[in-house]
Image (cartoon, rainbow, N blue to C red):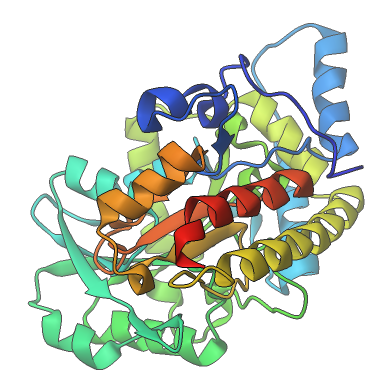
Length: 389
């Protein structure tokens, strides 16, 4: 597998490539899309082979007997994360945004507060608001260029109307891998305020070399209120399969979630199940290791080039492929720095304020693309902000 291969995704119904002109005014011809969190890489051959086998068979009926699929999930979590998962704890949703929405529906009531540690993945707030719940933004502390948790401030914010906390681990944006001590702090916070704790760990496989992710499920004393969310989609670049897993050890929580799944008539797409089972394999694991090494190389190129521009600071990335760049040091208003990125550099990026409080001076760049494009993006950024040199 060569991650350097340039694959033309234009005209393929790619949100990332085919929607950037409509949304950001950056033309697909000549523009660089560094916004939507999918990669410009093909998945491992084992995943491609599973889809080709389905196509060769040519009959696309209902999927039955998911034991191979659940065994693959359980193997992956044990092998890669040291986490033993019971087969009966696994629910399959249409991705983890859908999983989050189902958790909000199952475990909270209209008007309840749902706590987010902001800035954080924007879809969380979107589904919470759409469900008629209140988003409670607990701002992360920005210390020495990285995010830290501020439990004292958050304790003071709680009113008693909050019933759920959604954690993003590893964190998006910002790329923090939370330490065991920090996760223990989150667990204690959830217990103090009697919150159901939903831990979205979709980026848990995308770690920079030397980093170690601790699943929230390995933190003691939290099982009775914990809901874990994982997926193959981000890891293996198969987001279009819309397949994610909500994993619930506690039987009472599990029963509530199962009831909402049944009430909505939800069942998974067979393509996603075949792809996930193929991905969670030794071949898939070897591919992920190669991917993470490549992403680390992209990170180094991007950070060196961006941090050389006066006033710009790219947050050190411990996980994910989403670089979080602070433009506060330029003294520019958002319209100016975003305009330079989109109109001058012709790069489509996510705007920081969509991630909530604390994101206002930031833009998020997706660096999961062939290195030549990362090099080009850096050159365009240096030219767009050349007057600061």
